[in-house]
Length: 321
Image 1: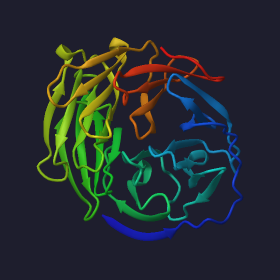
Image 2: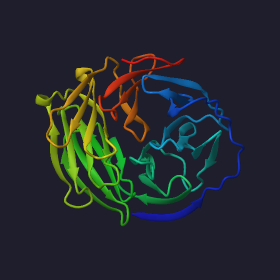
Image 3: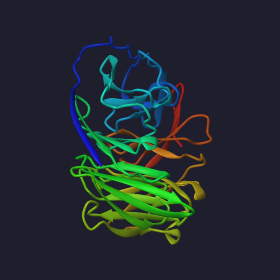
Image 4: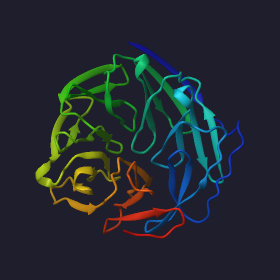
């Protein structure tokens, strides 16, 4: 195992900010080939014009706090940090990260991120995002096929879900010393930590289950939160509420979104026809964009209101499902 630590101070300098053509309230940002602002409010939200960047990324992930994005150039040759500021977007390369990154995950509140370069058996852990970034490079024997990746807000715990020959496992990495623990598990399709916590939620489409992992870097005990009898059918993605009291599941097989309370109350189901594949948090009030589906435009979930609902996101505004 190799450990390498370097600190990068991101300064307000370098490339000139690209102007963001945004008017009125902004829920956040969404990337699908181009980076766009999601303007308006739940029930009347729309995608704005594409932002102009110094170079066009091949892929991008926006922070849950909507204050930055991590972008990869073609073939993962360069990783850049895009600072999303009022009136502009600044693109800064992160030179400590070498070519080959093929998977990225950002922590629930955006303070940490994990980057995986599978071909080089390398994990990069980023802390201090977005203004002062410390990069920790770890060389470890990662699994051959990773189906999910997640990191805690303190950057101390990483979950890698592996799948091979219809069998699954979870690899738990303690980033402070590089220790890795491997546990047999159902094949996991998505995972995320709870905010400011070392507990995590996971979903398995093959098992039709939602799991909670307690004390991830320690005993790593697994509890089943919900299964088929609770309406879980081929789940594809999972997210957690800001207060840590609910788990949200994209239920592809049942064409709905499940809202699962952790206090034993019944689950709530919201019908959703699109075959969405992931949650993209838009605000601190449990508002999400649902992407990766077969619909022309992404949908939205307002899980923070007293009466949770799905809403449309259009190119010109308006719409509530």
